[in-house]
Image 1 (cartoon, rainbow, N blue to C red):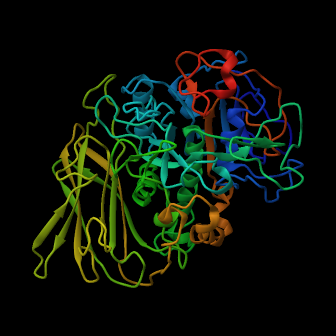
Image 2 (tube, one colour):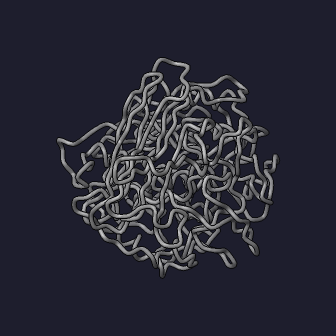
Image 3 (cartoon, rainbow, N blue to C red):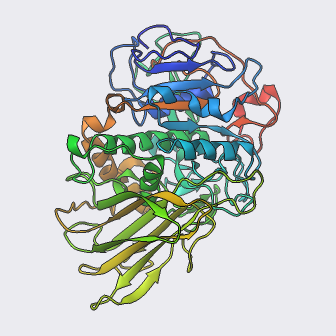
Length: 559
């Protein structure tokens, strides 16, 4: 930072990174701490002197962003959870609308925290909260997702394998879910996690409390998977996947704030403030199918919308329309439906883009909070379907969401994806000239009306982008970086403004355990021993343990 960090929860918008620090528990981190690593993944940016920035070996996903931080880890290694209003309110006055939570419990029920999170988001609909699903999915353990990742209005994030130097020997590639990643369903039978992101392993900031200005190794060599060198640390967990997704969500939010929609080019007159539901819908709409679970020696099968991958692996290249840079066009809408009403969106497949045979639509709404321990937790039930029309406008086929053959009355996020490419599920059903209707209707509301966000992507005419991603690491299942050129080139081509999150007024609340100093991201802090408490735990992972240890002595290999 530019100077010492104020730890009394006061705002200091002049700081380079940490503009607010709520020392609810204390204001320290421990050696190679969890909080520092997670914060670095979202928005770390190398600045050896705390002021002048340069490219680092482990910069975060949104390196232009700033941070509001709530410290929940105590000096004895426990985790103290304040009220949900304090958890989610930290940073809100500063404009923070993305909250990343890499912690949670073991219950898959809809409890106090889940309903409190849902209530906050219902009343503050610009906010989006991302929560780690948990690391209790080993041995193909289902119903292992933990509260507050059981909330309806948040995004619950599972972990996939990484690639290249972030893979250890014997690991499969990034199209595989990590074995430890917690699985659904919730106790009331909603599908979780919502999406998957890289989390096994992730290289980020490594806290060195006794040093100041620690940074990248001088020889430029990064540590291997699970290792550490100087100010860099590689660890695993859904804790690591969640900030990857949070940084991605910030880029999506800025996309709308700076007017990139609908043209795919920055245009001030097109600027709009997106709801959290819209950012969530964009993320989930572009998520891609995965192969299965890497159980180190065997692959446990997984299919879209199951309790392992659900919507799949997040993918910005399949989520946003950027002129000459992505392979799709998009239609987005936010609308309020009264009870008993419906809204239709008609599209015609046309143009020249590599997504010509793919049509995807995702509906998300922020639902009122349910009752504690509810068994039917979604209160306002909206429905999404796609109708295909014949030459005379007649309905020739109807497609329902989330892999079902009927409306979904359990979840408040629904997607219909029609992949008409050769060999895919809907081969031959999406072609140039075809006409479709995307319909949103109210099945049952407990309130008089419900706001929703809808994202539709496909090839709808106008200038299309043709990008060949058939050789990407995700398509081939490769375990090295050699197949990642298409996605990597796309990321490198994005305008600098898309990453300048701070310029758009977007900040983060990072809810983790300890202070966010280290690896030339922020500064220096005092060391503190870290262990576990009985109920709430940080979500990181070690290959040495299958379960969470309740002892302070096992803190270096907690799950």
